[in-house]
Structures are given as C-alpha cells and as structure tokens.
Image 1 (tube, one colour):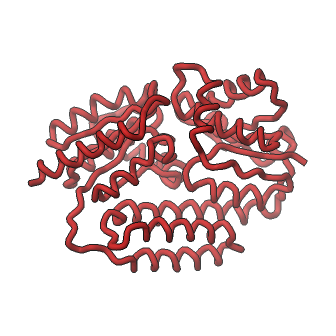
Image 2 (cartoon, one colour):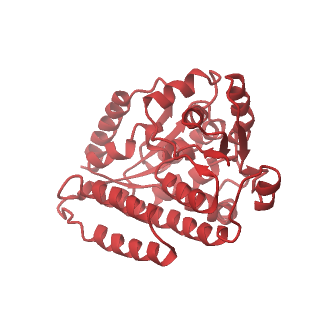
Length: 348
C-alpha cells in the first residue's frame, strides 16, 4: 500500500484529507500546517527566480516525504504552475528521495480514475468515490460560503476572536462528518451560529476588495495573514477567487468577462478575472483595492498597469503587494496600517 501526501492550501486541506482518506485504501498522510520551516526548506531547494507558490508547495511535499510518504499528489494550473510537478519531481529526486509524483491535472483536465488505477496503481474504492467526491465538493462550497461571510463581518464582532473560534470548531466537525446529510446539517447549524454572532452596528467598516494570484491570496501563510490584519483594522473584505470559483464557475465566468469588459482576450491564469473584479469594486463603492501576487508572476505583472489605471479612473486607491521570501510580516503590517489610515482620511 502507498503512503500518500499532498501540498497544503488554506482550509481546503480539510476537504482534501476527507476525500482521500475515504476513497483510498492507501494510507493518507495529512501534511502539517505551513510554518517558517516549510518555507525555509522549500526556498533552499528551489530555483532562485521561481515564484513563491513553487517554494511553498515544494516545502510541504518535502515535509510529506519526511513523514514517510512515498506517493505525492500535485495539480497543474493555468500558468507556470502547470509545469511545477516536473521540476519538483526532478528537485526531490536529486535530493535522494524515492517516490511517485502524480499530477492530478493534465492539459487543463483532471486525470481519470482509470488512469489513476492503471497508470499509477492507486488503490481507489471505486464504489465509494462518487459519493465522497460529491461530499468533498459540497464541503468546499460550504467552507467558501462561510468564509465569505466571515471576511465581510469579522471586523465588526463585539467579542474579538468569536468568528475564529467558531470557524475552527466548524472545520473540525466537517472533517468528521458521516455523510452528505450530516454535512448539510452541520452547515446549517454553523451558518445560523455565525449569523447570530453579535456585531457592533455602530461601526462603518472600510470596504476593500482583494484580487491577485490564486495561491498567494488563498494560502494565508504566503501573504502573512493579510486578511487577519485587515479585519483587525476594521475592514470588511470581499474576495471572489476561491476554490469553488476556480473549479466550478471560472470557465463560464471568463466567457462573460470577455464579452462584458474592455479586455477581449485571455491574459493567462487569473489576470482577466482580477481586472474584471477590480472594475466591479471600483463601480460599486469600495474604498480601496489590494492586489496580491507572488514575485515573478508574469500574468499578474501584465494585469497590474490596467488595475492601476482603473483605480486612477475611478479614484479608488490600489495597494500592490509582491510577496517573496524576503517579505516580512512587519513590512506588510506597516503598509496595511498606512493604507487603511489613508482610506479613512479620504472617506472623511
């Protein structure tokens, strides 16, 4: 039997582990949360000018191998991320590890179960896969729904930490749910509890929209938990890019963006989405926009001048972050403080 590990990305690891542990007869090793050690070892063995998501995911794969994994799962993407698995396999092999690396997305399409069974020799419980895939898909949707509500309202909670404590308990309960209806009951329970958290109605929070490269905005450690900083500054956050959007909505949305926006051709990865969402934020009363990307992210570099010009056209300030291994939490916090103070003065 294989021992399987995979990269971490935000709270979606809960759904990933739930799915894999229920549909595989192989042992699934849950990767640890990303720490400074993860980043350090990922950076040490990565090419200098590769983007930071490569370094973060390489670090999590290395930690999985150190925990005894002999099979690694990776996914492709709409930019250089689609080639990560080849280079990461080479790096890890050169370090002396013996393993199989399975890229779950090839040419923009998910690898079939037949291929996983025959080509990669995974021991999949074929009769259980459809059921648990549907549950995991719904779990991702519920996580995204709840997190959208948290981003918008956490800044106004009367008792600080209430949203975070309830979110942690929700994820623990989700990971142990017994089936689809069990998950649905949990979602309804927590949805109601979140909406009963007492908010300070006297607060008129700043509204900031977040756009940028998908991994860097969805994995909190790679942006130094910038959403937590913003909530503490009294900011209501909107972010449209999440796994539900990327896997189940983006393909249809891109056709709409190409038709409705002034950009009439794809720009690669998330660039077109970010331009469209920037224009939406500008036209719908947002106080500011934050664009987050990893260093050397070519599609986002192409989008930045357009995003900046939109901000100037609508008089909406835009703050750009380019995250790399030398970006410090203190530096991010300082810029966030200054940006929010400026937005407050502008509103006054």
